[in-house]
Length: 268
Image 1: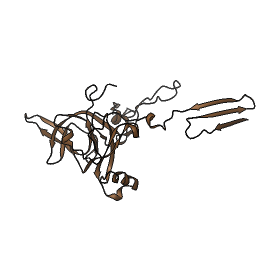
Image 2 (image 1 turned 180 degrees about the vertical axis):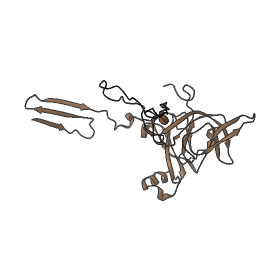
Image 3 (image 1 turned 90 degrees about the vertical axis):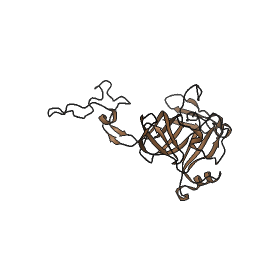
Image 4 (image 1 turned 120 degrees about the horizontal axis):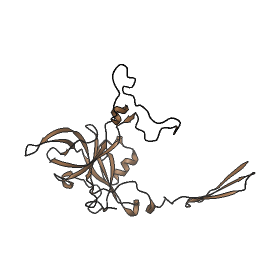
């Protein structure tokens, strides 16, 4: 017969004592300690540092853009709805890191919960669907309810990082998902599009983690780095970025200055 007893510590403590005793073995005492994550200064922030503040946009589609020298460039057209307003400034003293929270895409009040409405009304901002943070090294030059304009942050020729959600493909096989080769399509073949062997037999007797197999494809966050801004049209309020961007038309995109280590972002 074993007896397990746990001594509950005060709320401010970060450890507790564990005692195990048995009729067949002596009593053992263990003391388990955990790091005090309650302190704001020791909070672990799972967010990478940005090279500068960015904006959010909406993917409109792709087209061909003709440069002055006649070169045809495939570009993705990104439009901007009402928004890109600073809704919160997070500082090292209050949140443990410096970041700018930006809202995008105006919606009706009834689409938001009362806590979300209260958060936006605190700074006098309009109701917005999306809120994202940009972690920065300094918050100088930013004010609450400030509107971020794309052509004031970027110019033609700049390199940007664009992230968004890719198009969902559903459950797909290994050929489409991982570009596997198929087997012979003749009548005698019994392996046309099958996956094939997924491991040895008794040893190891299991499938190794990370094995490329059929499964859910797409619908994940993807970042495309160092894309060139080809054209900024102030009249149409759109920007043309070279290359393909994640998602289908109408998808939300996050545009930030391209990270270049040692130039606009520290090496450490």
